[in-house]
Amino acid sequence: MTKAALNSLMMIAAIGTGFMPVSCYAYALDAQLDCKSDAHSFIAPLLNDQYIDPNPMRVEANSVDAFRTAHGANLTAFGFRVYAVLGYEQDDAMFKQGSGLPINDSGYGAVVLGPADEVEARAREAGSDAVVRQVVPLLVTAVFCTGH
Image 1 (cartoon, rainbow, N blue to C red):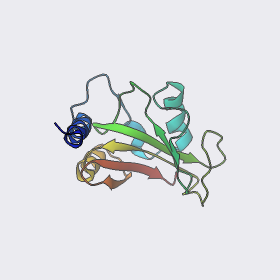
Image 2: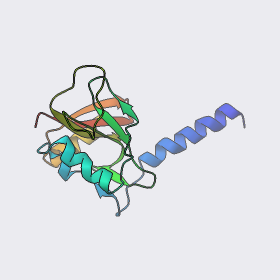
Image 3: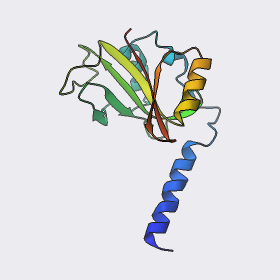
């Protein structure tokens, strides 16, 4: 088997694990993604309980910090596996400032492994009015709350 074929198989297997059913011991973020909170209240417990790494893996120009899930953490949102948690709150030392204008005073959400239409349908069923946007076709979707 060629190296390219082996790499392709490994990528398919890695992506496929993101779509496997989530076990019963997962920590669900559904209730917090009702968009009635703020970024600090959403992110702080995840940091304290070590569900996410304390240093953001990326800070966007609009100051949204992307925190990677901690090794072994099993976070879900609306039944989908969480890849990263997003957040920004103005004048909060927990968040790093980006190079541009911040999105709002506060915003938070999650990046999940799943198709946008299915993620949005489950979010609406749960009563969330979060913005749902496809990040990577058929694979990765962002769920984001702003304006509280």
